[in-house]
Image (tube, rainbow, N blue to C red; front, side, top):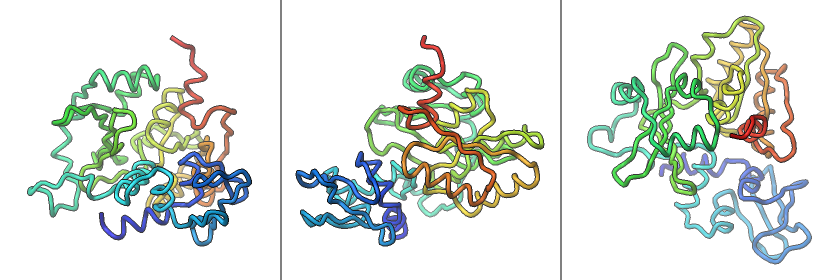
Amino acid sequence: MEKYEIQKLRDLPIEGVAERLGLRVVRHKSLCPFHDDHHASLSFSVRRNSFRCFVCGSSGGTIDLVMRHLSLGFREACKWLADENCIILTEYQPQTSDISHQTLFDASRYERYFERPWLSPEARRFLFEERRIDPRVVRWCRLTSWKDRSGIPWLQTPYFDRQGKLIGIQNRNLIKGAMPRFRFPVGSQCGIYNLPVLNLLRPGEDLYITEGCSDCWAMLSAGHKAIAIPSATLLTKKDAELLTSLASSLSLTFHMYPDRDAPGERLFLQLQQVLPSLVHHQLPPGCKDFGEYYLSTIAPR
């Protein structure tokens, strides 16, 4: 891992990391998981992006919190944080002699995989049984799958620019709990997802913004036009400028169902700074993201 990648992990919002670990943060405090705590003695400093327990003395930043809470080493904790926040680490990328010095994404190496997409039994089960995604959405997004030399099944999600050019790929591990959960070929530009849908929009139309590809598939399956931001930590300046341009040129109405956690609400607030008229939709109790809400609205098979 490079130093800048480690710094990116350390810059993740500490309270968001805590909530992804299962801690309930209220007014910058939570029960300390490192001792038998009954009075919320673990305190979070948003300014310093750190935690400290004033009873047992545990303290540190995002990586330290993951290391302590999950009993992981430094590298494993970094991998966990990267997977949870869709951050690309260099050690997850192929390191063959042909591309070890390559920085640009070589679309010609991968385009053929999406000409005739193929779904393994694991991919079909994930998409159609677990997530109940509409087959038309799977075809539109050109999702495909493959297995590596170890027999691990992966779902391949292509990223296209607005003109339909392949600019990146996200590989998702289909074995639950396995790490790494995501892998990206060298040079992949996985910013805003589903950009080709912008060509179908008419002035004044509704466009939904989701967090992550799977929620985008659910939103499309529900009949809405949608794009996705990779995660609450990956709204780049370039993507923000694109959203601002769309808002002004097409007079679109933007909508969002933020995830029911601190990172989700934080992403909404980030987007609201770019899109002041962004409409906030509240997920019902019991649904942590739009994917779960979508599943709750369709009839059981």
